[in-house]
Length: 296
Image 1: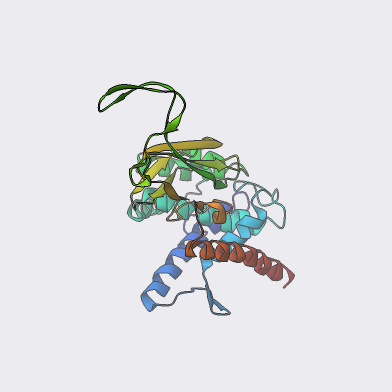
Image 2 (image 1 turned 120 degrees about the vertical axis):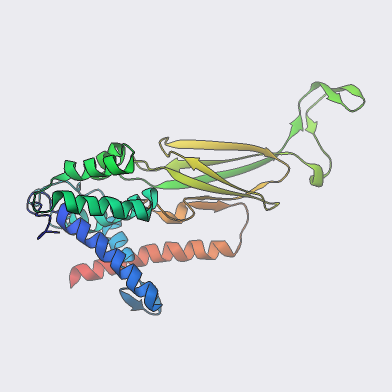
């Protein structure tokens, strides 16, 4: 990219290093997938380590230290690797998930053909994405390129309450009946009607559209799109089965989420809990690895 696109690496280092690191990730993923190797960076104690893991580690530890579009001399020395390499890589992967790999490839090819040897700047990249995606992505680039804003989506609660009939007159199969005090609408759990809800919050100040997976105890599932803008959002349902599991971004398309271990919640312990805490352990392991790397 530095040789063909000729962006100013001194003034906008992410335009060189970010694109290069993203395509390195793409090539590693393709090569090692074809070879059947699980970890493109290697294995530590049998755990596959991928380039994506490395970029996540660097970004998580330095997310608020600066913005991507800073000049090289404005960046804190410890932030340069995150701001020029790792965060741009996560930005491009997240955009790839959002737009689709085929469209992402077309955008990259157009960017190369239009701007080779012409010294493009950040706004030129944004214009290409807006033009060929057919979307106005300024909201995305303004947050993640020009600021140090972060996001952290969390499922904070799940509630299930058996519906009750309030005091007063109610229609029934034999006509109107008078209820003196609130009572359960059905005496049998098999016929019960539940009012269920869950709340998701954003612990950060940036946002990104996500899909929320919902599963009820009878096996019914829903995929709910959410624009992610609100700091707190509650979803409510009336169904014959209790709400059991909720997961924000189940496919993990949003790689800028600071903490993925709080993206899910269930009403009872299950084997999934084991994997949740395994993920939390790996989160801390990533940071330990980063600290060790900083000492080398």
